[in-house]
Amino acid sequence: MKKLTLLVLLCVSYLIPTMTNAQEVTYVEDPSQGYLFNRMRDNWFIQADGGVGLMMSSYDKHEKFGHRLGAKADLFIGKWFSPLLGLRGGFDFEQIKGATWTGNYAALGYRNWPRQLDGGAFVPQHFNNFGLVGDVMFNVSNWLCGYKPYRFYNAILYVGMAVNWVYARDGARPVSDGKWKYGANDDPKHSRNYSMQIGLLNSFAITKKLDFNVDLRFDLMQEHIDGAGMGYRTWNEYPGILLGLTYKLGKSEWNAPVTAVCPPYKYTDAEGDALVANLNDANRKIADLENQLRKCLEKAPAPNADPAAGEAPLATVYFPINRTEVLGVQRNVIEAVAEVMKNENRNYMLTGWADNYTGNDQINVRLRKGRVATVKSELVKKGVADSRLETQINNGELTNYGPKAASLDRAVTIHRK
Image (tube, rainbow, N blue to C red; front, side, top):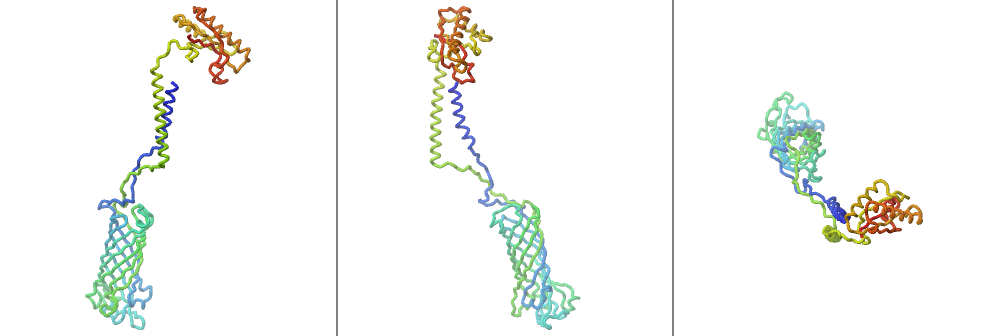
């Protein structure tokens, strides 16, 4: 029984650390492999913004700064095709204010303008552009810092082009009374212009669906009004700043491919070899214990085993401290043992014991002799022949379990001979 228990404990001691250290494979998204394309209906947005722009054509320096600020507005619809790349297109409005040369017959309303500049050499002008615009957008934040859904701030660079149609007041009458109409005064062939634009869209998340935008834009505008066909430059700068909102439609986040993550190998070659050696040693010990257990189970008990060889006693009769008479349940033990002895053709050795933790040697010798004599007398009374019973005493320890188990040493053991 002890060997079987040892075998079980040994197996458990080797299995528990193995089960404890085992790590399962996990599955996570791996952004290093890129991101999956969403459905076509996802990642759309609507964007509206408005602000001011400053015209910087050849003659605008002759006009006051405040009179050169014009309104700008856009309405876009767009789509992100990846966390980095998107497109948008829509409508734009630009209010162009500045100054032009008095001799520029293409100027808007110069002849009847009530206010003259620099002694009449220049006059103010004002016209409006309405057009179509398209941009390619690149998310710099996702490129530099990695994609993060619902990041509070995103820096988005864009570049695009626009085509605009010019609307101005009729210059044939005083400008303040003139009606807005399509085309520039005296120059109907130059009533449409083109522009290129580049900008930085600073996007701040308000909710998962709504962003607030600060758009820093720079336009390079084809200017047909300031001296078209007269040898002057026809591309003019038009920087501006706009504030607006972006509303996201459908799914707006992106998913990466899912990959398996295996637990890291945490042993060196030397440690691995040591583990293998320990495992082989444990397997040998287990095999040896299994072999011993099998032999024990196959071995039949010897009918005439020698008591000195360590055979278990037929019975043990226990006594209270400092007593030699058989008391209580021990009488039942004597009666049962006597019945067995009468049915066996065997001789028996009765050994008297006393604990060595209490009393002195003289008292303990008396107790050993008295106890073994009492048990023999009781067995004879029950019908066991006196000639079949031998007695002796043993001055050692019966169990040797210590003072707390001393009551197990106050006994008489009965062995078959």
